[in-house]
Length: 88
Image (cartoon, rainbow, N blue to C red; front, side, top):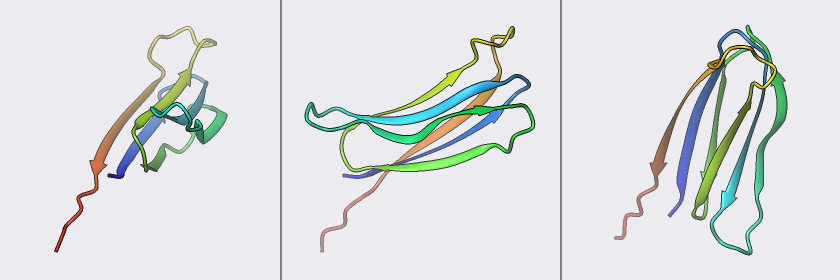
């Protein structure tokens, strides 16, 4: 069945690059760029996004803070909701 993945991300003081992609488990499926890479800075509005996965796979959130001197520059959370089918 389908699964809805919902996530939030907020920048905590230093610049970073952020992207999201869905990588299906099936060999013949293509990776989907959910959000293209973009620069985020402190003070940007938090990201709230969702993706509906129609097949098995993983959602990869990439947070690149290599230009930061601090280790923790962002906070995130996520929820996965599986759809339920009701047979009548």
